[in-house]
Image (cartoon, rainbow, N blue to C red; front, side, top):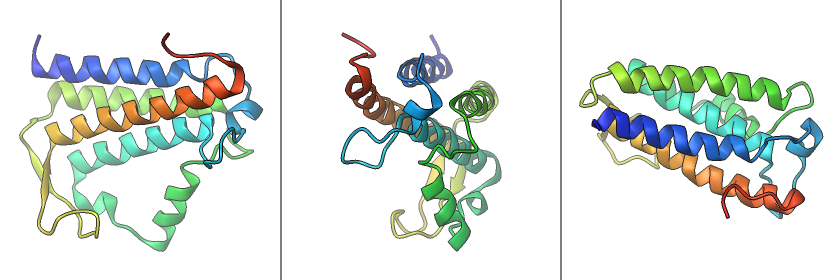
Length: 163
């Protein structure tokens, strides 16, 4: 198995765990706040999709895709909310397209290609990220939020991803 195969397998597995958490629920349930956190099942799916898209854009187009503005802060906050004009089905369909694009990048992009990170308090000065490191980050982000979603789903109706 190649490094690319390993990355694709990890992405597929963790995306599958995340998608499993929303099987059979309604849009209303996907918007429901179930813990003291603001997180919702639909919001987590939307956030993971947008975050994956953002990092894939960074791999291809560089740091300008991550420039933070007043609008981008609002977009980031909105990324955790399944709005009334959105459906879980629509968010999942968008996620499917984003995942397909990322998978194609994993298969074809130079994993050693680097981009400079934008200036931000959460990034070290003059730091770069390789495509490889970005894809590993996407795996981690997806796995982390799949765990959050699993807790929310278990709170909603007892369903568990595993176990």
